Image (cartoon, rainbow, N blue to C red):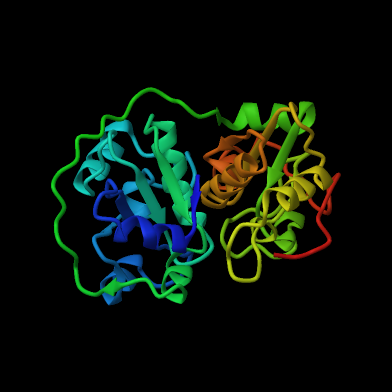
Length: 285
């Protein structure tokens, strides 16, 4: 699920090792376009994948980043050179949130071998990894076939049920969870019964995932118990995929509410909660 920069360096330097497909998924909410960052410098041989256009459908009642259709995703992955018979490594700038979205979608549609570069492009350059600029070479077209759903997925009703019958984690910053500071979505607050565990708390200061034992501690403090039903959501389903990846690293399993808060609030009949809720981490992201 994770690969370190040093391990990737060794893998790419080994002429006898099968070369993985590298996907550059740099994206930040309200930040610079990822394509610009890619053209300024990327891991040699990596293909750029546009999160908004290729890892999400059109914004609307499904939220700001609803899942792409199987056809759209399959075409995007084939364009990027993805094959089901070759390992895929996705990376972003440094937090792994966008890369985790790509990881989750590939897993959801049945790819058997997907990893995220821990610490992203920042960790790669810090480790002395080679970088190339420009638009990148067009890879040979891949033959990835997007299959039926292979990862647990929640809709709004399932998320509401899980918030009370299990554990539903909200990966947003505490002030957004509490409804005190919402600049992205038109309604503030959180799903009633959800527990706030900001995605940033699952990383160290350099943007790399905490060790599995520390991740387990974080999830236990949020009320997650081994074998219990767990789900995650955020603003639009990107950081929530990051939480699902962290759960797997901790030896746990979680479902993704892909529509997340931006879908939840499209129906005024759905309740909205404000304040701290049942659990909130004391450490802001």
